[in-house]
Image (cartoon, rainbow, N blue to C red):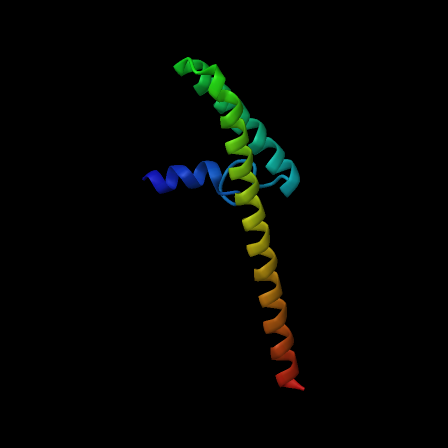
Length: 91
């Protein structure tokens, strides 16, 4: 259940932002992370923690999106290589 909830928010192929271009989706995710960092910092009364929280969320999202992009490119490369190999075997 927790995994399903996580994917509904963080998995770009399942969340409501999936139809947007990747950079726009990244931008919105970054804005949402800033918003929630601010809300939680204000809620618990640690406004001095908002800065480090924003930096941590930015680094986390950059890492997640960079990794997802590399995996997507690697998947496309593997598919192209497999198709090229199949074509070479036919000729």
